Amino acid sequence: MTNWDDCQKALGISFNDELLLKKAFVHSSYLNENPNFILCSNERLEFLGDAILGFVVAESIYSEFPELPEGELTRIRSSLVCGETLAQVASLLKLGDWLLLGEGEDASGGRMRQSNLANAVEALIGAIYLDQGLVEAKEFIFRQLEPMLERIKTGEAIPNYKALLQELSQKIKKATPLYHLVAATGPDHNKQFTVEVLIEGEVLGRGTGKNKKAAETEAARLAWENYREKKDTTMPSLA
Image (cartoon, rainbow, N blue to C red; front, side):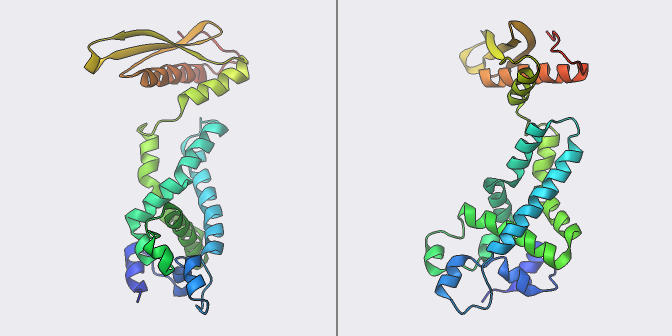
């Protein structure tokens, strides 16, 4: 029998209504095999938690990254609330251990299935919100996503500067950036690539890296950041 006290200790949250906690872990397959079970599946809580998670993350990155445009904020938000990220959170919390699954779902690896784990995180957020309120739900979300947010803020998980520059150039110049390999120097095991990014034939940035992709990203970053600092209405020469 599941020990829900242990679950609450592992989560660091003491529920006022323990039934809400249990409901967050009820998979529909469990109800198919246990039709008289007193609780419904976690799908409604998942719906609620998904909305709360999206709002909390959007509010956070809106404040943390005041200079980023809508498109890049959307990309960051998507990376934080996607199924892969939520499944990683669930794995760290070992939420799969608490899932109530049907025998078939359990036998087929349901405790490790990404969709089940991600849904459990969203359902748990919904349960925390209903039981503890928005403040506690926010704190739980931030505790889980803080490492990834820090990676984004420190540049380890970098924004998609090529997409940012393309969006900007399309808006200002109605043109697409072109990347030109200038040089590839050094031995095969330690090559250094240099790439220029051009818009309408004008060099806007030059980057170097250990491969072409890294060099292109650096060129795009320099072009985009330099242009943003200019805060002009036309695309200036940034070479």
